[in-house]
Image (cartoon, rainbow, N blue to C red; front, side):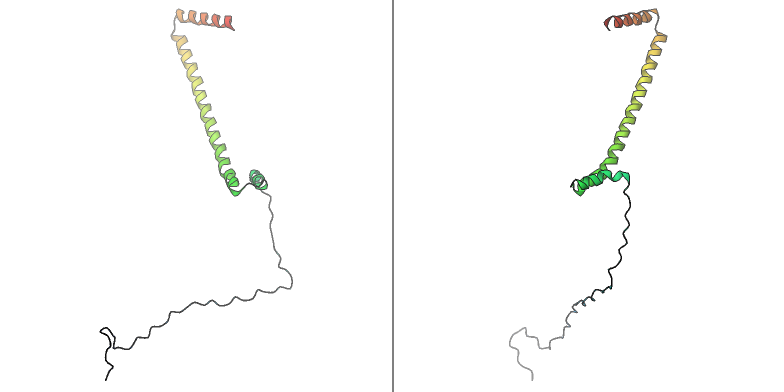
Length: 130
């Protein structure tokens, strides 16, 4: 005969066995190896390339890594942009000089005696001022 139920929701079946989760337990580390003599450290020291001078100065002056990164990144970028600007300006100056020469040549060839007289008067006026 089974025991009477005390409450409406009592479970008459036996409780199931729930396995416990496996917990990871690390094993202790091995002891460090003991040497008879200190290990030999091979360190290669190379000469820095010449473009690192600014970086070395920045580090030696106590500047942070940001200054070094800015020097490394913006240095060549600045040189490249200034070179490109100078090349563009030189090209524009050349085009302007050639255009002015062409305009002067065409005006001289097309103009009649009046334009030549006007050019001579302009030249005389310039000589008197300067």
